[in-house]
Length: 67
Image (cartoon, rainbow, N blue to C red; front, side):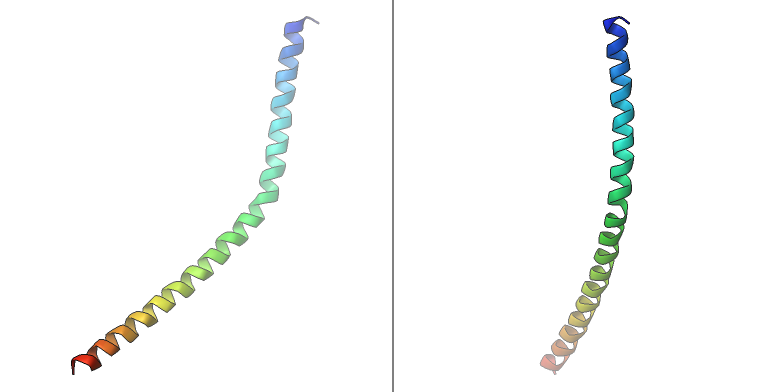
């Protein structure tokens, strides 16, 4: 084999190894990211509920102050 053929083989080998590594890494990180998204969604719901309650209390207090 010539040097060119070895270089080309090495390039394709590196590409395939990179694809395999990337797939394994993706499979490892995917459930972690899903759990983080689920937690963020729960925190968002709690935050929105707290904001809603705060807004209601603010409106109730402003009504009593004006009267």
